[in-house]
Image 1 (cartoon, helix red, strand yellow):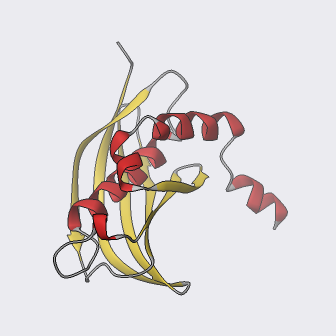
Image 2: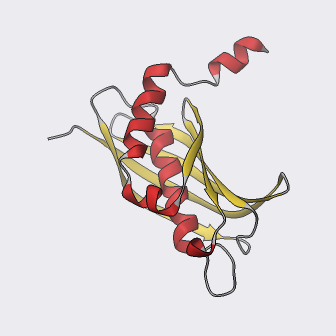
Length: 149
């Protein structure tokens, strides 16, 4: 069990690289999103509920829901990339399955297939209220590994 828990942790170097990149994202800062878990091929991002991220009916806005899903998948892929490379989204598709309600949203990006150039991730977003999670969005994403100029 302890060995399994260790395997689910990203290396300190990978975690620092992901957190530093995330810190530079203006949109995530603006939304109030934060990374809550970094593991090899898997990243969780939490978005607290507040009026600025809702739509006219009081649900989390689809744009905010999609943005944290995109970032969670991007950073999940980034955990698999070598030092000195960057990540960009090539495309993603998201299905909004239910109104996004809760105290906060939790986006989970999971690598399905890591390649030399392209990586494919599963995207899931959960509405969380009183510790109970409900799936509100699901999607898939393709990312590209790039070398900085």
